[in-house]
Image (cartoon, rainbow, N blue to C red; front, top):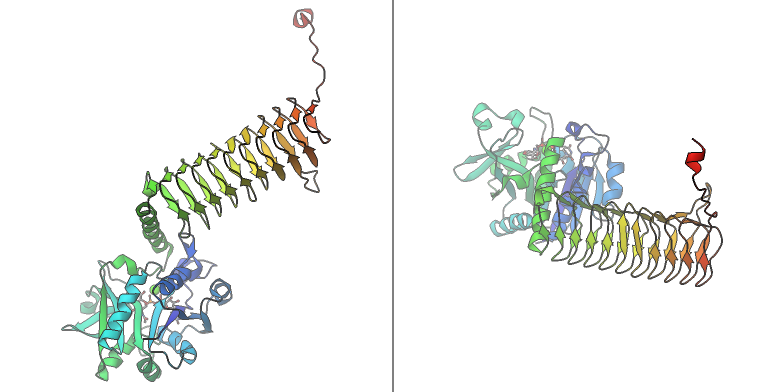
Length: 452
Ligand code: UD1
Ligand code: CA
C-alpha cells in the first residue's frame, strides 16, 4: 500500500512563548519535527509533505530535502492544513498518514501498526487513539458500542463527553480517495470556527464507511507538545529511551538519570560513563572507555580505551588509550593520536598531538603540530597570537620542553631538542640542541640581615 505522510506544522505554537517556531524546539538535541520525520522514515514512509505556515522560513531549511513543502498562509484549522497538501498528493497513492509536527515521542513501530490495521480493515480512516488519565485539551473519541462515531474537540464537548478518557492523538491514516472526496465537505460550524480534520470521522459514518481505531498502550507516546512543561516531559522520555538503548548495547551508565546522551550519539560497548556527563551532537565514542563525572563532549570522535575525567571536548578527535583531565579543554580542531596524556588545566586548540606525547599540567597549546614522544613541561604556553594574526608552532618527535616555556610562534623545535625550564623561545631550535634563555642566578649572602 503506497503511503504518503502529511506533517502538520503550520500552527503558531502560541503557548511556547517563543521566537522559534514550535516544531523547531529541540528534544534531546533534535528538533521535534525532525523526530517526526525520522520516525516516519524508520516506519518505511518515505513520501512526506510538510504543511508550513508560522515561521515557515525558519522551518524550511531544517527539513529541506526531507519532505515536499506546502504553505498554509492562514491557519484555519487542521482540515484546512490538509487541504493545502491535497494538490501534491501523488495520484497513485493509497494511504494518507496525517501526523502533527509536535509529537516527538511516537515510535516507528506504532506507525507501522496503524498502517497495517488500516490496510487490513480497509477503512476510510483509521485513528491512533490513547487513554489519558487527564484528557483535558484533547479531542475525545465518542464510541457507539465498539464503533467510533465521532471526535469531539474539548471546546465543543458537553459535560458527559468531557469525561471520556479515550483521546485523539492527532495521527490518522486516510484512504486517499475518501480524503480527497470529502475534504471539501468540512465546515467551520464549531466553537473555534476552524476547519476540523476530525470532522471526517463523522462524515465517514454518515456515508456508512468503515472507521477504525488503533489504541496506543502507552499514552506518553502520544504527547503533543504545546508548552515548555510538555517539552521537558518529552525530553525526559527521550533521554530515558536513549540511555536504555545504549545500556542494552553494552554501555554502563552508573546513573542514567544523571546522564545526557544526545539523539545521534553512538557509544561502543564496555564504555563506562559516570554521572553528570553530557554527550551532544554527532559524537562517536568507542569501546572500553572510562568517561568520568562532569565531562561534556560535543561533535567529537573518541577512540577506544581512553580515561577521560571532568573534561570538555568540542569538535575534536581523540585516539586510543589516552589519559585526559581532570579539567582539560580540547577545543575545535584538536586531534590526539594514541597514548597521549593531556593533564589537568590544559587547553589544546586546533592542534595535533602525536603518539605517546604528554602535556601533563597547566598548559596552552594552540595552532600547533606536536610530534610523537614529546614532553611538554608544566606551564608551557604557545604564544600563537600577536593581536592580529595566529601563527603555528611545530614541535618535532622526541623534543623535551622544560616547564614554564613560552614558545613564540611561528617557531619550530626540531627532533630531540631540549628546552631549559623558564625559557622564552623566539627562534627555531635545531635537532638535539639545548635552548635556554635565562638570566644568571645571583645570590647575595646575608642580604636580608644587611637590609634590616
Ligand atoms: C488537535 C486535534 C485533537 C487532538 C490533538 C492532538 C483537531 C481539530 N483537533 O487539536 O482532536 O486531540 O490535535 O494533539 O484536529 N496546524 C496546522 N494548521 C492549522 C492548525 C493546526 O498546521 O491551521 C497544526 C499545528 O501546527 C499542530 C497540529 O496541526 O502541529 C495540531 O494543531 P493544534 O492546534 O495543536 O491542535 P489541537 O487543538 O491540539
Ligand atoms: Ca496540539
